Amino acid sequence: MKANYIEDFEEWKREFFFSAPVQVRFSETDMFGHVNNTVPIAYFEFARIEFMKEMGLMQRWLEPGNELFPVVADMQVDFVQQVFFDEKLDVHVKIARIGTSSVDVHYWTVNEKGETCFTGRGAIVQVSKQTNRGYPWTKEEIEMLQSQQLAVAKK
Amino acid sequence: MKANYIEDFEEWKREFFFSAPVQVRFSETDMFGHVNNTVPIAYFEFARIEFMKEMGLMQRWLEPGNELFPVVADMQVDFVQQVFFDEKLDVHVKIARIGTSSVDVHYWTVNEKGETCFTGRGAIVQVSKQTNRGYPWTKEEIEMLQSQQLAVAKK
Amino acid sequence: MKANYIEDFEEWKREFFFSAPVQVRFSETDMFGHVNNTVPIAYFEFARIEFMKEMGLMQRWLEPGNELFPVVADMQVDFVQQVFFDEKLDVHVKIARIGTSSVDVHYWTVNEKGETCFTGRGAIVQVSKQTNRGYPWTKEEIEMLQSQQLAVAKK
Amino acid sequence: MKANYIEDFEEWKREFFFSAPVQVRFSETDMFGHVNNTVPIAYFEFARIEFMKEMGLMQRWLEPGNELFPVVADMQVDFVQQVFFDEKLDVHVKIARIGTSSVDVHYWTVNEKGETCFTGRGAIVQVSKQTNRGYPWTKEEIEMLQSQQLAVAKK
Image (tube, rainbow over all chains, first blue to last red; front, top):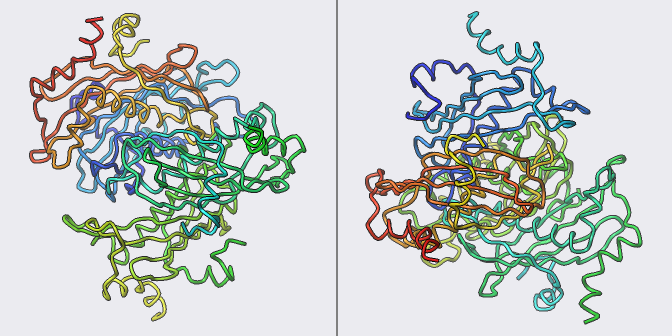
């Protein structure tokens, strides 16, 4: 694991408190017989939004008339191991860093054997429809973004 | 060609006056080595919208604040011949029938050898966002929908 | 329900013995705010393959060196009701008719309220890689294809 | 442009000698009204393969019985500017670095106004089906990979 967003891989893995399941669809394979490289980013989006729902943020963005929405600023995917039709994956997601109006989200996908298939990261920015620029998190939203870690720490 | 929407195949083919080009992407193949069966419907959508733009209808639906939008009511795809990576296809589109608030659109996809790969049809309904029901075409819109045939007939 | 493959809708629904769950991904919506019309056919494929696995047929086709594979001959989708981001759907699948080397598969998708969202049908043909033509089912395979109905009938 | 793979943006842009056109499909938008973040990686794949065809490499990988194939090792996408339905994009591709059995490919996508929409990079590794490991480029292949730059330099 030499991705530039991972310092200590064992420690990095221990910091994930949330995951969403994904099953590889036949239509997601390509003629080389494995999952096409364009697909994991869709798995990441699915898991990230499940996480945003869990924290209560996605609901806010989807409220009718809401003026703020999340935008993917950048995305990195590391294809550690080939994945094939019908594999059942677990896509782990965590908030690695909270900025003024953005978050750095990390992704760790494992197969049923617990082997790492994909890792990744990407910044999400909360943007205002009016200004088309980043819109700062409120104190409450920052607490939402920290809620997973706190929930686990309390256990 | 025994599709229930084609009576006389030679005549049916002669009635197409518009087509849009599509090149098969690698990500559109699957592990059986050919184009996955979920893909042609996206080719049909692309070609249909190119056609709707040509007739001037798509622009109306996309105007900000517009209250009408097109909905696909049903779709049929016949996979006549397997298609493979990198093939260059021509997706023909025609209006087969104009209803009160709908149109029946037919599709005919050929490869570079002129062989039929996919045929299809589907109804598009113009729906009002307020009532969520079909909204009748204006006289002007019916003329737009007939414009391709007329343009060719005049030649 | 006026689809040409449904005679009596209530009876048609009662004949489904298998279903697979699907959750609408954000990336499957389009700028009209609902699930794009190209997506349900991928849900159908997912559910059909889950069904083929349940019956033991998919495993045969995926065996290394196997010379037979399933091909989608045609597909019909009826979009009965708009579907939106995050809805949890149940995609029912049944074998409606068994041919010499093909099956006619029907699809019925419902949302969490039990409302019908999509219906559909399509023929799957078992094709030989050598001849590129339909390859007849064995007696054992026909029994596999009938197994769901029989399993339920025995209850 | 603060992507970690771009030192001097003006110079970086000048080094692109190849591009492939892409037109945004309706089915590639999402309910936020713009191109979904999972889509540009498919544009990159399309343009990269067009480039690999231009250099003569893709043909080798697709030859029947060929034991080598290209694998995407990692991918970075920077979403510089939102892109909308029907935009016509130009996806530039270049080989930024040639390794023993890999290449580092860079991507620069511009809209019709010449504005930068997406930038990206990713390593492609030539893998052997037998060993499942990187397989070194031959001298001839390295020349193929350098051909674009040389062709332009000669002008």
